Length: 572
Image: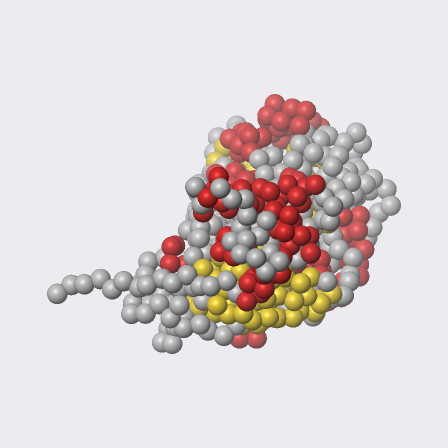
């Protein structure tokens, strides 16, 4: 006989803090009025006192909750019950942990570009791995729609040498036409943010094709292109000045001749996952793939001595003047040693590119020089050439030294990308986050409960014979002194677990701190199952009790539309 076991899903009661808040602000009654809710928003949730917007927000919350939960009662009463109040607090739409959207941009956007961390893509045109995947404008579009502000395109002659393709050189990636990518950038550049898009070009072209690219750029973007009046900028303009503008950044062609690799001593021992507070990576990477990365690290030097960001150029080459005029941010790689490359020039600003390994090595000896350089200039960090599967690296070393462009493979996924996505949820998700002043802070995070898994997963997804056993990992990613992970107890056999656990974090650099939240399902015999994650910028967290929606491994909500945690944030 065949049968299907059905699991009963019970809705958890509101946490004690929610009940106490309702009783307090409803003055002991059974319903909470709009004015009482407004008081709660001001005194507990940290909304502005005396602000008309707060009163309007309270009115809108009551209307939306009644309309959603009580189609008839909305005409007969205008107040919230305890269940309504709990529903509001647990709504990711009405009560999110941070504010997003154009109206949530709150940092000073009139400072120079060098004062900001900038959401940056690496090989933005690749659909998958670095060696065999297709090149397309689709990942470029997706990146722009997610708020990425720096798009990288590698441009090469086509087979007949009369047109320009975008592809990853010295690989078997299938190319895409440059013109198609440029048109897609124009169409989608400002879909998520009005602030400038920077196109970094890795140029492998002849003079004639550079002139053709200049013509393409001018025709596609027109007056959107930012073209400086002088050859070199003395100071970078601000994001505010550059709203709805396109900026071209590449090496002036003659500088390709002088570009040299950082040689020797760049191989850094990978920290073992057992020693890492982050835990092991929940991605498609296998142990065999990681071993292969290590083995190939040195072999790639022989296959591609110029590395992935180096370029070739004919010694007799002269640049096309119309192309050079469009380069607003001049780029280069270290020449004459790192110390020399980090020198700050009083009358010129520029962009310097280094690999993740070169940055880590340089930070040990030239940390102060890097910070000083990034106060006026732009530092771009790119993944090492052996990240064939489009994996990423920890961005904190770059952020802690002021590197504005931490170039990431946006088509990948994993914990490093979660952190990048978390950082750029700050400042309204506009793609620019102001670099910090160092402060000391202590912050409390409380995990009340979770819900929604029974709506987004099959009943047998986590366990064939019983409901899941969920626990939450909560921690900080940021400065080394701040990094820590903590864990709740495991709640057994419950689709709507209640933890009621509080954690305290002391931060040395709160502006770079990201609150990491992961939910896993305990499995006694196998590896624990992944059940959702998110990363949130601590500096942007709204105080009070908030609903925190969780994402899947790729940082997306499509498959986890219902899963969320109820949490409280006390941010000092």
